[in-house]
Length: 172
Length: 172
DNA sequence: GGGCCGTTTGATATAATATAACATTTCAGC
DNA sequence: GCTGAAATGTTATATTATATCAAACGGCCC
Image: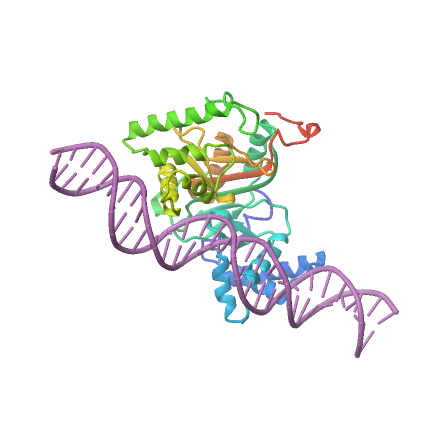
């Protein structure tokens, strides 16, 4: 496993200083949007912060409920528009199998969004595994299919939620 | 590319005798359900047939509309229950990114559902590529994650919808 | 600062997807 | 035919997402 990503980043499902995740995600968002001339407004930034409450994908209406306490007129379009902006900037991902949204762990790098989603704790661990990319590219190319986007959502049990004795074969 | 699957089966997006797809799918469903003691009732069989109208994933409410002409009391639960049964028997797949359903091309074999979905013609080409399976297994195992189900939905352009001059690199 | 214009947000309504809960019917096995 | 479990009918409602138009905001030119 190479690259600056997974090796140095704590597993989403494991105990970690999540405050740091949030602070870093917001700082990166500020930086990227400034660089791109995109307007990370107060509302959008707040929605991003709410998405980053945890690594568990959150639904639009959950966000709306939390937002409603601060923004009086908040309605579905309020949150969906913010989410659209954040998706467009690559700051969050949509988890299709959950109709939920989760913060992107590497919005400054190109990556396609591969997720390991624990059915027990719910946390979504983002991968950017070049082997998966390659396998998909090859499989598609063999059939003459031109890949544009990939949705890879793997459901199962994360290391924290697996029974201890099953945690074998971490082999690379 | 090995196995009895993709090599002999026509590409969903290409011109083919689709009537044969439907007949075979229904025959296989009859056979599998009989073997399993599962009841492929008239309604469920008809829903399966409607899903197999094409290789384009179809929404539950589309099915409901088509069904409504024949089954007077058809309501959302009617179709969702039939779909649940068919999913449970592995006769159809749910396409998460489209909230749609599509016939399974190999319900008698184990397979996990990998799809190439054309954004132009809409058809979903089902793969069962062991390289993708392996890449996912390895990526997950490296992080101690126990895979239970995979959702792989690749969006792009199918060979029929690609501009001719772009159809390069079909390399295996 | 004031006017202009494109973007963002507010506000209301409604569409699209999915499930809960309970009544009735059907059907395989006896 | 009886019976019990499974399947379907029926009504209501939950959940997710978008359309539409109006108002407010924010950069920019002068």
